[in-house]
Image 1 (cartoon, rainbow, N blue to C red):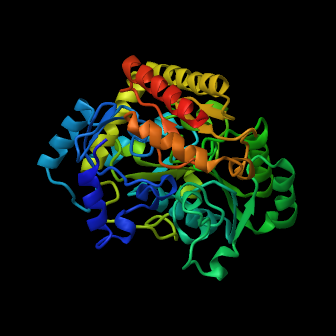
Image 2: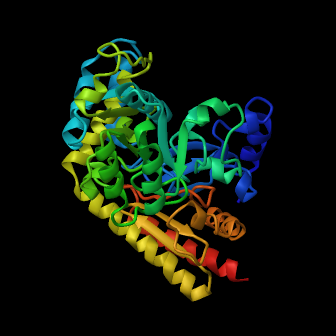
Length: 430
């Protein structure tokens, strides 16, 4: 596989951009390769600057659930651009998208648009603190909630991949208000509430963790969080940046039947464009300026082009919910292929899957939290990743990420991917 143009671009980028990339995991450090520089994408495929074509299972880290450059979404984007790309003023599209989110997710009574998942999380935590008059928040090891200061402690995703689970530049006086517990640890959760219930403003959790790889909540875990937060007047925030409108049209909370107080959404509500949103109970969201005393603002919040993309994406998902069945069936087929290859070639492996999200962990342990995720053989993952990329399969360059199946993946893609899995595992055996 020729990657000469990508290599040259990467080397040049290092002179102008830290590490040559604008988000750390893209640097491919953990897999020992030069990242392909992407030129274009359509449907299930992406093409790099050297004209290498890949079947894409990253999907812009999740939001491209319809596939890349969906023609109906692109048409709406074009129409919106012709009317101007940014106003910094209210638009009808903001109202339409807000109503669509509220109608899809029963726990959300009001919603505020922002420009990223990180911004949405940061704002939701501020609102929870303003609403409760308390300072401390509880998060779980391995759950990544963006790069705002108080939430980088024991984070997942790129922080794990680069081996830096915390960040320089975060004041210790700020992080002292973040309490950390083990994901799926019932006893530790109860102990935190015994010690800190009256200090907690919020508990924030990925209802299905997606940033230490896909890790499902054990039966009763989310229910216990909901019970304790209700009992002690603590705001429960579901971070559905990954799971929202992907696990189901109503998100993970719709799947599990649990109503949080607040919910954070990511790029999927903008059709993959730079969009985030946070919403929840009306009495809580009414704390936000200009109605309430919690300040949050943004010139690009509710950007008309992004709103147009989001409206069309959610319309397609709402009116064609058979999409969820299709992408889950394809994900199940991939899950089976990983397990079959594991047995065939004697490679220790565990696979976690929720709907169209899955992760293949190179470990003998069931992965239920950060500790068990960290037992993975990252060296073996590196070899597997390199062989998959050589076979034209584009997956996240990290053991601690998910495979995202989209509606654009057809049987031909799945068959080619299964063949690549078998090839990669046969090479691991050597």
